[in-house]
Image 1 (tube, rainbow, N blue to C red):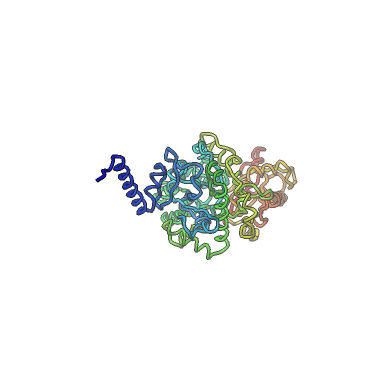
Image 2: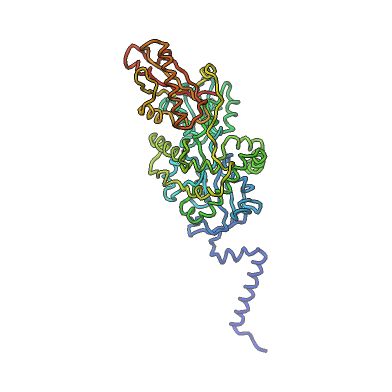
Length: 527
């Protein structure tokens, strides 16, 4: 009987082992050989999706293959509902309209620990990340190695940010000398700086108690450790309930164009995935437009995002109601692509807050110009497909007319005093006066876009009181006319008051005192 050679035995052994390997591979749906043949680089996620990693274990900046989902980092916030609604949830699925209509997979990664989420972005575990445009300059130095670019705006905060105050604080002026809890270098901080500016104060006029987050700010207020706190909804209402006599001094419901959420990505990732990101943007904008246009769609969006965020449907609806979901038209305006737009742009907010935070010593390092830090191509390329009224920009705010007596009695939230010099007996604005208005008040007026503005003209005591009263009113009206004509503000927004010499802030016995009394007061007033 023939005997098997050593080589034959080896060959049979190899064949048996191969049969075992292929059998096990078949029983595990191919996962065994995928890991072996992939050299160990493939990383399996909890949901079974896979993406390639480089030798350091980081997700490749090019975004892996076209089958990888676009992973979007988010926090618990209603402003991202447009994309989540269009995706039919947070996970990639066959039901997603991104998948059905655009052939892309999208996954939303919820993480309210922002530093940890940003680290995931740096490591490549998140492709597209949220931030607010006002605070973007504060993180640009630490992200310099990744060359991040802003892709689109998802929302304006419209009530989601607020400052709560103890009894007896009725205006910004009343904050002077008080202790205010705020999460520094966050949208809360930006809101506080804007509010102080609108009231003619600076951070040197208050005692800032820095806290890690808006949640901590609310806790500090409820414990009685501070006089005021900048918080996020729903902690504004909860704080008012917890502290007797407390109230909301101001919120982004009227400070409507300060806090803007945007999404950004590494430039390398954008260039490698431009087509997919254009589809992501278009679907997202369509989702936002559908929610804005229909209460039923808003309810459906709330049912989609509520369970993901551990919220009831009612709470999810309230969260969506605290924002303006921005449309494609809003993004055209935001990125400065509409030459006729006179409202707040992303570049203006970015530059203003870079200067503000740098002056406070809170930014150390280079911050690229907004033109370098933005990538408006997604918006430009979508203009031919995102048409119609649902995709149009939000119209300028309109106001019902109030009579003079009612307007004069409305409570002021903040008063900004500006010295506008008129020639004797003249109520016409010259170029110097217009420049002063532009520099010292226009940005406040645009930022607090849903607040009424009372313009009060004041004079010194030179001449008769009756003449000065009439002249001061004409001067206040000329300021309102300029703002309405030049910046497309609703004329009904302004309440015109002529005080003449009746409200001096200095002694009229000296020239320096009279100069201080010849002023214009801009007041943000409660509706």
